Image (cartoon, rainbow, N blue to C red):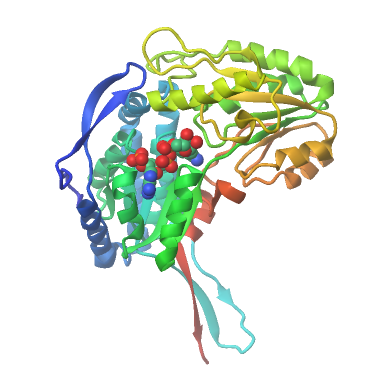
Amino acid sequence: MDGGWRDGAGGRRTALVNPATEEAFVEVAAAEVSDVDAAVESAHRAWEGGWRDMAPGKREALLHAVARKLREHQEEIAQLERLHIGKPIADARDEAGLGARVFEYYAGAVTKFGGQTLPVARGGLDFTLRQSMGVVAGIVPWNFPFPIACWKVAPALAAGNCVVLKPASLSPLTALKLGQLAHEAGLPPGVLQVLPGGGSTIGDALVTHPRVRKVSFTGSTEVGKRIMELASRDLKRVSLELGGKSPNIVFADADWGKAADSSPMSVFANTGQDCCARSRVFVERGVFEGFVERFVAATGKLVVGDPADEGTQLGPLVSAGQRASVEGYLEDARRTGARFAVGGGRRAGRGYYLEPAVLLNVGPGDRCWREEIFGPVVAIVPFDDEAAMLREVNDTPYGLSGSVWTSNLSRALRVSRAVQSGVLSVNSHSSVHVEAPFGGFKQSGLGRDLGMAAMEGYTELKNIYVGE
Ligand code: NDP
């Protein structure tokens, strides 16, 4: 805090458990409600005291300096990510690099994002300004802790705000490293505060603090709704990136073999703990059998194992609780008659591992079809009619992501328009691009991360008219 390290006011600490070994390996200070006030006030002072009015070129240079630090420390960040959430090391390296890329992109945005001049009817000069808001609270989850922290912090700072970042209790290490490196890169004290602590302890205090002008949240739909309710009391701005139950739609005219080979990682990557996971697969009946066979074969080849091994593709679930929750869904699926084409069992030895599960014979009312599982579980169903399939695709409170596979361009465009989601990929499973907006329809969220859309979300729009 304020550019230095501090214990929480109550002196409490949280032990972190490595999910691959089930052993506690470090303790981290946990903030109390009174720490929230200190952090927010300090961020507010930093905003008023210079960051808000800093010359754009200087702010741009500082964000580039942060990006350079992140690149220099990419391996250290990746190893911390591996330790606290069991992220496979190759993915953790990529995500550390992604975080640096996010800072580079928004460093560039500082001098490229602005207002407009408008030819108003009465003459004179009319122009708009994009102005910073003040203190932004960034609340981030444990599934992609480092990149999501970066894509909240970097655009908020680029737009001239100061940030109080609250990492998830399971994954504070890379957020703390980000705070340290940003300070070493020259970010003035108070501009970025990192506040580890329990959401149930400090969440309400952070969200309702009168000096916090925007809450940018990624996590569960349930907590997102609570944040929106609390934020409405003083009309704080909110952006919410929440859960998903995304479709993967495969038409018979597609290169369905390619779709089948690549689809397992569209749902099982990050051990299924991914809001974009394509967990409902719709396959046109003519190629259903062949698709399932190849999907199951590709699933069988995935390397589940120690996140420290270079070749590992799937690590453990993040915690014993998360694995128990996923197993609850699998138990339900067994009871309601789902057929397990492969997977669903534990792996022998230590660590919160689960073999990725492919479910067939799942009905539209089944819990594993309707709810976000956040684990390595997918259900595949056949379809005959495009319109009926699309009704089913959209019959969910969620609308985050999805894929469509077809070689027919008209169909690709028609279906892309019809799927109710904020992000969609055609003949690909790629959802996240630093340069493009990311967020959801319906109960998958509000507002957008990434791209220039994020800059809009971290600024107020002011119109100024100058008479002649
Ligand atoms: P949460 O929504 O509880 O946690 C996300 C973040 O919000 C964490 O930093 C958490 O802190 C914080 N938080 C929790 N309660 C509050 C509160 N009252 N006020 C402010 N912040 C709060 O998700 P979980 O970690 O419990 O995961 C539960 C489920 O949510 C998953 O199984 C998955 O379905 C979904 N999820 C979706 C994500 C996504 O990317 N869309 C990401 C994570 C989860 P703390 O960790 O200290 O509780």
